[in-house]
Length: 238
Image 1 (tube, rainbow, N blue to C red):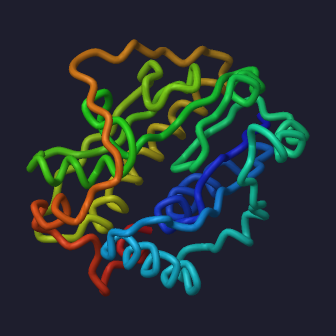
Image 2 (image 1 turned 90 degrees about the vertical axis):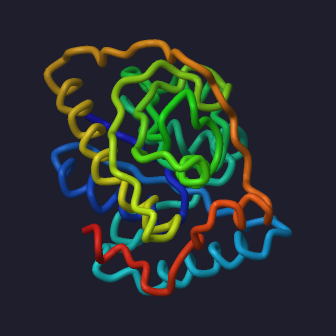
């Protein structure tokens, strides 16, 4: 199977690739990533981005992006679209990708385009879903694997969800990294289903939908948890 990953150039995406790529070696894999600068006036978000970049500069024990022959692809819908279709994906897997996919990209793979979202849908649509779940004192956090069916954000039918206990003794980043093992296991189960020529069963989202944007300084203070600690490392999760 030809599988194309659309990810972001960050620590959580790299952790996901370290879970997934070794388990999918029998497939023809292509990895594209977005790498866009953080444009924020919220000091703690900017500091989080710098910390994440520092961890990526020395990713061990994670295998780095270069080992996956990852290619930068910031404009998949426009200028970079020819490079995307040249990979001839049968399945596209999006993880933390920083572009809203348009119909041409969504409809290219014959087996569909799926997204691993870092929150439970539909309650936590949008960005930094784990942060908002922690702010709301959720006891259970996790991921949602869903189809991308159009250019609306995090609205596609749900394939599966993972559930992880929130750890309020740890940072936001630690909790983000902690949810990806379960989410990636669900991706691998879905790939195995497609391998035996069975369709992925999904169901429409139900319940109250809530879209979240980036938090402001007051939101972060109210959450009461640091966005990261200097001891945070992907080594704990691989």
